[in-house]
Length: 160
Image (tube, rainbow, N blue to C red; front, side, top):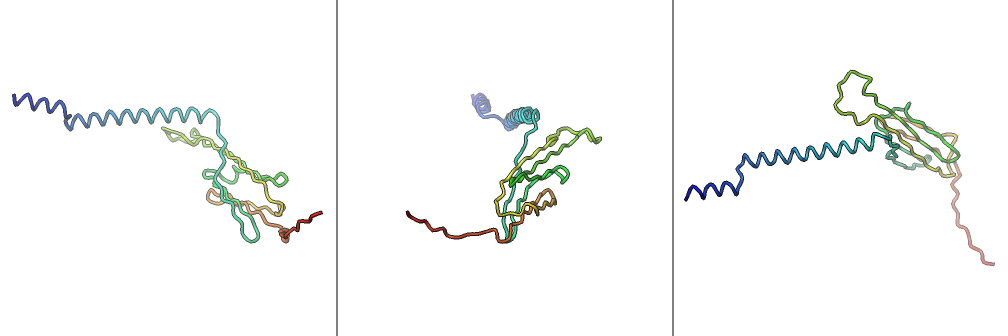
């Protein structure tokens, strides 16, 4: 009877080898799920190139406004900075051609990138002297303020 009891204990509690096998099965299932998630992400994102709004910093110093745009993977040739009235618009498009070199890619995720961002500039800027600089994936737009254009005063309310 002692032998039967030890067999029942081993059936109710899996051995360390069974636990490893269960973990391998679980890992395989999670790997399959991750592959399916990536498949759907790739399917829905690759059919139409999305236009992204890149992250930016906007700050002001004594004589200028600055807009810094984070555009990694792009060069100054990929970017277009334009001004329409007082609306500053930055567009860009870059492509990565994995067939252009002799590497044997197993996965290509960054084949195309497009950006578009616009700001309405305040009336106290000198749009004739806008400057754009590009360094290390950061586009810096310097927007000079008009000298003496900032007028602040208290306006009295009159009653009739």
